[in-house]
Length: 137
View: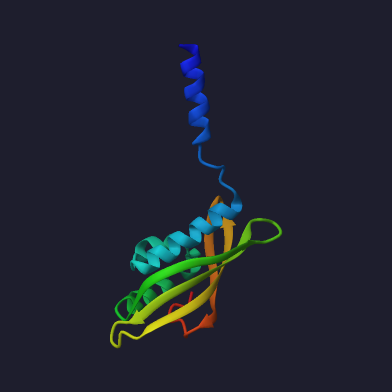
């Protein structure tokens, strides 16, 4: 019986998730934000926006949600800053205008900062590809 319990504990230990690192949580925050942008879940996205920018962010994204649809995204690269409390993530988005259905591809660099165990999106800027309608934060 002791042997079965020991073997079970060892087996379960092999399937334990890896510890959450700053890099993992940064990528997770950026992926969540991009996914919420893809599905136009502005009410969830706003939690990653600094409080002083939320009203402008909501107004801008409410309007764009009627005009633009994000169809795919890929997190391309993430880099932590020296303090590990800030970082940059590059995300490539595929999107189209709802009026013309022309497909666009844009790579955006997002600047994040960790505040109280939560990543906050401070800024984003287009690094390549088509002009990005969601540039404003």
